[in-house]
Structure formats: structure tokens, C-alpha cells
Image (tube, rainbow, N blue to C red; front, top):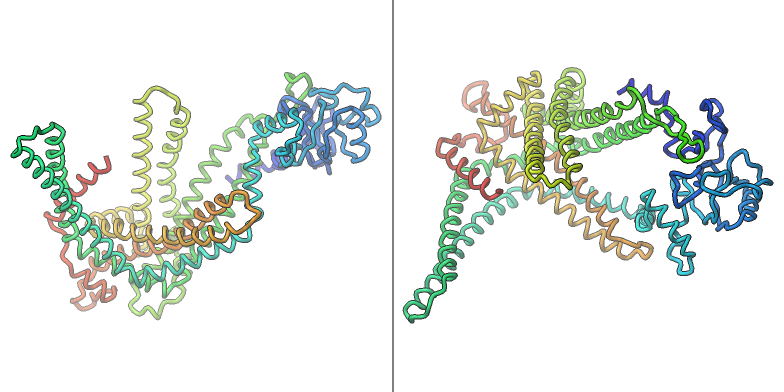
Length: 618
């Protein structure tokens, strides 16, 4: 990636993307005298101060001549005299560079030059391109020809009046958006505190409501079946003809009631078997709250990760701009005049593939570093008997990462990359074959994408636990992943409880932060008179607030997952009775450690529940 960056910066010109270039290969607003293109007239000109690209025909801009001008036309120019007068007054020459202003009246006006097609409409500089001004588009007395030109131009370049209004709304409300993002941060921080002190209430409320809801639903189905059967029996006693649909309803409600009863019994058995594990969920929530209270700077780890990711993304975009402009200039004679196009050739045409792979790998690597730092700090906190003796656990975790385990994190993120690339390729193929009539092929592609997505999620979960084992034992990635898988397999009910009940509670927390921020933003932004579509900033704030809540609560979730592995490792190494084998865990976790491990009946119940869950999902 470094080689590609150096090569592209030396050979490319990112300013060409921003300011554009004329038909002779000159980048606008830049001195091109040192890089003339051979056999191309007017190439290698100094266009400093000429920052806008002017198209000779707005109806067909890509096939018309283009020149760099200092100023876009500020009024409609319908005659040659008006074009000459505009050039004399503003110094912005709209004809080809070699045409003197005094000779404008003698030239031919058309999209192939040497002067532009008439009429020339009032324009605005949109991304340094002279485009018909859309602000006058709503005017009732607008010339139909000009209105048509505006529509066609913005269709070609992908701009739209609604898009401009939305950008205007963002510009008008950026201060309020920043303040509301800060409000979302405060609400998310409060939610973390509530998770610590009210987790037990929320978790047990969910469990109790699930049990009561299942029992009530089953009872209602049996009551409905009983009422239906009573009505049929009553009609039989009165010799009233019975319709076939009534018998079908009775049979259907009987089947539904039996199925609901079986599922309710399974659910109650699962809750009975997992009651100790649910207690573990509550205890881990409390333990995670203590951990974050002792290491509050863990909560701002997503901030550093975001800054590093943003910096890398800026670097990636800049290099991508240079890669896309490393093409060789070629002359195009098909437009009726000599026009320059830049074409990527040779090895540079494949750079963007490597650059894209680098984006995915480095992004996964940065996120994996965050997971390792949080897991390492949590493990250090857990296996320290006197928590008051902790000194800079986060800094120590970062040092261990850099000095000893940077390769393990890079290897773990590479595994995720290897799974992501085929999935993205299949998604691209799916998008290209959207209109295909081959249903079997489309179904197979979707199944493969789904399987790869599931595999990616499993590997991410395994990687995160492997980083925790690396932080505890200091082993390599493969041995740590093997041990992490063994621990998860031996504590499947505990892991299931954490990743079902615990994940759902955290999801409720994220939704709560988003809903609170959304309510505040609606009340505030609705009162601003300058906004066209205040729903768009509200939608953006909902997304931002959910991401902010995810950053805070994802740390909470990582801490809980790390604590679960530390808990399992502690129970495997110590018994709390033998000398020198005292538990590291707190008293609340010791109660959970005393619960018996699941037996064959528990495994049978778990398999049955998974079977019915698969049926439900299908």
C-alpha cells in the first residue's frame, strides 16, 4: 500500500478530480506548463485562477469542448455580442484559449468550438463545474429551454434540487446537530450507569415477561379451541348443519394449542435449566459496571479507534484519488475535435483492488486492536486480587499489544478479510444478475452470501474471545483460538445466556438512547423555520445517536464477554477451597460458580429448543 501510494502520488494528480480538466488535458487552477502532452495543442497551459470547468453545450456536456474559466456566466448570454461583452467585463473568456476577445464575433459557435453553443444560461459553480443555476428553477417565468437544460444537466451529473435543499438544511442546522450529538453522548453515558444498577431488574423482567407471555398465549389458544368445540357441540345438539370450515377451525386451533404447549414447556424448561446462568448474566453486568468504574477510560476507547479509523480513511481516500488519476493521456478524435482522456493502463489499473483489500484488512485490524486492548485491560483487572493496586491497565494492555501480539491481531483480522472478500464478490454478482430470470442461481447466490455472513459472525466472535485468551495466557493466535473454542463449547449455556439475554438488554439500551435523542431533536428542529425537510437531519441524528450508543455499549459488551472467559478460566484453574487456589472473582460471581455444569438432559433441551427455533426462523 505504501508503494502504491508513492507511485500514485508521483504519477497522478488528485486536483484533477476536484477542479476537473479541459479538453486539452490541463488541470484547472494549476500551472501545467511543466507537464505538456505531446502533439496536443493548447496543452501545458497555466490555468491558475481559472478554477471552473465551462462546458460548451450543457445539453451534451461530455461530448462538448471544455475550457477552464475564472467565472461562470452570471446571466443568460443569447448573442455573440453578449458573450464578448461578458469576457471584456469579467475577464472570463468562454471561447477557446487561442481566440482573442476582439475576434469573438467572427467565430463559429457550437459544442465543438471554437466558441460555445448559444444561448449560454446563467450558471453556478457546483463542485467547480459551471452548471445551470438551480436556484432560479422554481421561477414561474423561467425560459422553457433553460428549464430543460437545467433538468438534463443535473440528470447527467447526478445533482438534484432536493439534494441541494437537503445540503442546505444540513448547513443551516449543523450547530444543532453537533449539540444533539453531545446530548446523545450524555444519554449513552447515563444508560451505561443504568445498566450497572438496573441490569438485574431489566433481565429478570424480560425473563418473567417471556414466561408469562408464553403461558398466557397458550392458555388463550386452549380457551379459543374450547369455545370453538363448544359451539360445534351446541349446533350438533340443535341439529344445525355444521360447515366444513368450522371443523377445520377446530382442528387448526387444536394443533396450534398443542404446538404452543410444547414450545411453552420447552421454554420453561430452558428457563429452569438456565436460571443460574441468568443469574450469571446479572452478576456479569454488575461486574462489568465495577470494571468500568475502576477503568473509566475504557469508555473512550471507541473515540481513539474512531479517530484512527477516520485518519486512515482520509489517507485511503486521498491515495484512491491519486490512483484514479494515474492514467496516461490519450487523444480522442471521435468528438469532432482533439480531446484528451486519461486511461489507466498496466499495473496501475489493478491498484484499486489491492487498495480495497487494504481498506478492509486495516479497518478490521484497527477494530481488532481495540478489542485486544479492552480484553487485556479487563483480564488484568479481573486477575488482580487488590483492585486498588492497578496502575495504568489500559496503557499496559496497549504496550503488550504493540510489543508482543501485533502479529496475532493482524492474523485474526486477515481471517475476517478472507471471508469478507468472497461475500462481497457474491453480493456484486447478485447486484449484476438482479434482472435475471434464473431463480435457482439467484437462490444459490443468496444462500452462499447468508452462509458466508454467518461464518464471518462466528469467526468475529471466536476472534474476540481468542484475543482475551491471548491477553490472559500470552499464547499465539491459533492456540488461543483453540482454547477459546474449547471454553465456549464447555460453557455453552453460559455463553448462550450472555449472547441472548445480555445482548437483548444491550440492544434495548441502544434503542433507548436513539429514541430519547430522536424525541429531543424532533422538538428542537421542528421549531427552526429555515429547514425544508427537518426529517432528514432527524434521521441523521437517529443514526448518529445509535452509533454513539453502540460505541459505549459495545465496550460494555466486550467487557462482559471478556469477564465471562475470565470467569470460566478462573473456575477451571481454582476451586476456592484448596490453599493457593482461591477464586479471583467477586462474591456475587462465586455464587454462580457453585452451580453445577449442564448435564445430558440440559443438552437435550438445548438441542430441542434450537430445533424449534430453526423451524420458527424458516
